[in-house]
Length: 113
Image (cartoon, one colour):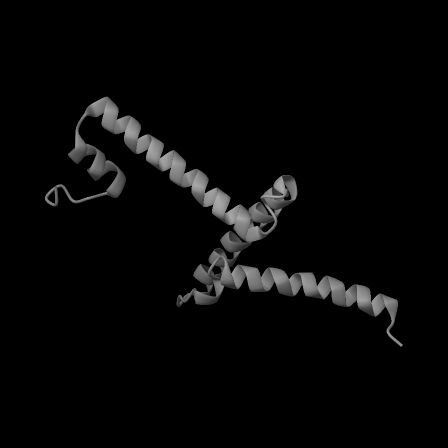
């Protein structure tokens, strides 16, 4: 017979495994390769902070449109894309200088334009 407390421990462990899987697949922890221990340690802290943000935002915004962590990540990326593109258009209108806008937002070498 299955011990109820064992099931609770397994349930807790399963949530840890889900977080480990998501940080590896969604945030790139599995692909991170550096030589120094300190760099890896700092990167892991950043990954966990990013994942905490995703979980916190998911808890706050869960709805019929937001059902998975991937939905939150896509929404966050889309918000950044809108902000970036809006800034590009605003600067283009303000300056009228396409080369300046390209250099600013695409970080082009001044010789490339």
